[in-house]
Length: 170
Image 1: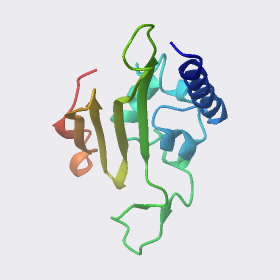
Image 2: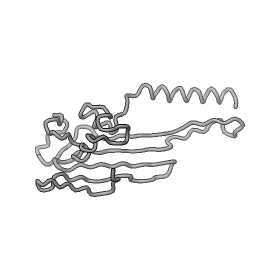
Image 3: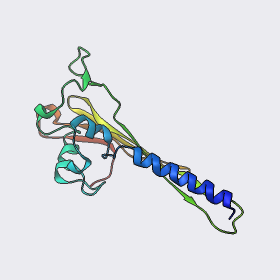
Image 4: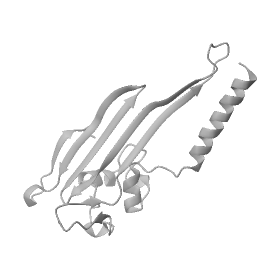
């Protein structure tokens, strides 16, 4: 391996490490952590496994159990009490990649990114309706939707919830 390729590889690693150190820590779906001003460990232990509180939060349509804990001004006032128009898009992106270098190889380095790309979003869209989706691309192949569902809470004032779509049972 030439000195130039080693220097280039080290510079790339330093750049990626610097970007990683400059970023704020992730908190599961960061929109929930920002909205409620909590850490990911409030719901997860370790990520992605849910604690009992996290299971309750998801089962409640991504809302706090006590409605008074909902932050004010999280939605725009549309004049329609049935519509929740959020101020910020609850969207998270996760990417994984790697760099490999081998002596006596025809290429100087192998830079694979994004190796895995995940797009996640979820949250309330109406007083008793929430959504969640998780889209994944792995090794350049579109794997598609891992999870995508609508959650209808407390149908007709009962204690019955309806989850409609594709999801994993935890």
